[in-house]
Image: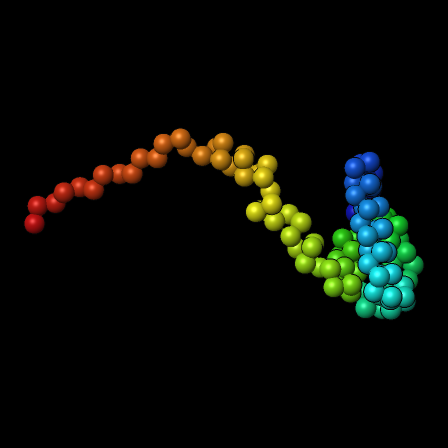
Length: 109
């Protein structure tokens, strides 16, 4: 069983926004909760929790709901290395300032 975890305020805020965005996307597509829940292989009650931004719902369920709405590509790019400017700065700061290549040895033929 998973260890109980209290989500931080920032995580709760991000999940509430994600849930609201999922709700809005479902409404724009004129899909009922039952249809989206069926397409995501979950229950209507779980979809309600997703749309509320419940942090106890598994990430896989959020991904399934996004896929059911055709929005999974956004999740795939969430931690993309190209968008991780802080990570790129950290790697660059650890790179050596000067690189030396070994000299080739001359051999008498």
